[in-house]
Length: 204
Image 1 (cartoon, rainbow, N blue to C red):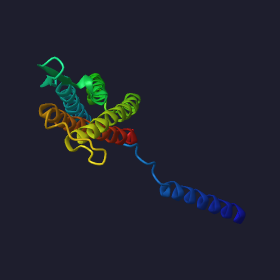
Image 2: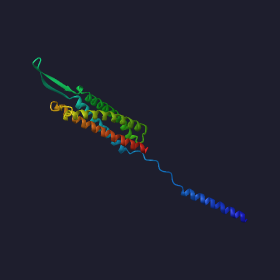
Image 3: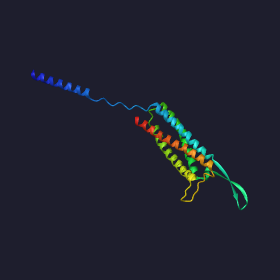
Image 4: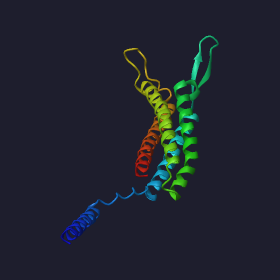
């Protein structure tokens, strides 16, 4: 009888210990909340702003033309020479890169709208991050190259005895400078888009 009581007491102690361990076990961590719909709305707005900026930059440079009179000493008559963006390979690349960015951003608005209604989408956000990174690299290359040429056109290079040409082609330089502002604004918007989508992916 004494052994039976001792065994029963030991079994009761074990059961109480197991219950205490169960009660003291930590609760499982809650699943991360999906990105909010507000973040998807910000994504849509930034894409729209970037598309308008790059489109304006491409149109501003592509439609620029400047004609100047010049005197032909051999034939003794005055003729006009026209300068457009096609005369500068760097500006041609600038127009093409901004046009590519505009086309991509307009197409990506469809996925941005999709994310507003389905905030937990993961695959499409990953695709957007990859494509956004590619486009921002192309756009940065075009804008940086055009900015370098624009700087030389404004200031010239005294060491190489290169004078600035903006005194002669003032309207061309002004439009290119304004287009550069729009292009760099698009780059900033794309970089913010990459950041927001990376944050949204980390929450999934």
